[in-house]
Image (cartoon, each protein chain N blue to C red):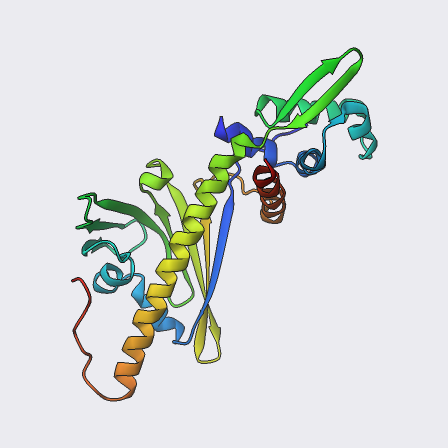
Length: 118
Length: 148
């Protein structure tokens, strides 16, 4: 399912559709007006987004109302946030270690082997 | 209409380090160094094995957390080009034990280094997503999620 989400996101028109729906619910016709491609073309993109669970459609008479469902992207966002924090803290530790070594080498003193927790 | 089936969210992290890039590069392949800086504060020690060649593997096991858990990362080196490029697969609990790809560029900035780390969720043979597009939509959807 997550791969379908990524596939859905891969297309710039579909990303633009999601951008519009992030602001407000719209019907398909109104949505299609925002794009230079045909209504049929926009509909096909919307169907891909629906299959990925990112867009929900409500039919009221002749109107097809579209709503964003951001839930499927939570996992992807969480992954990005997790690893952003992970690498930020690791790189900070790397920098601290390298600066400590560099200072130790520069002053001509032997490196102090004392380390926390080892 | 073609759909790129294999895409990936891409994370990019940058850092300036006031140390020559040769030193920064080395620290990624030296098991003693890794055992120190790869270990977060709430673990008491780390065991690292590194086979620093393309196709070689690495394993970083962090141990000794107060709740008794330990945490393993492992992977395989895809590219080793000192002092400028390092790339490896990265597998852990947080990746559902699926391979992700980390690529690190080391750029000379005066006497220091700019490190650019890219972390891709899927293996390199997958087609890459438009990075900027993904970042934009993540931002938009992040706002939508917080709005509820």
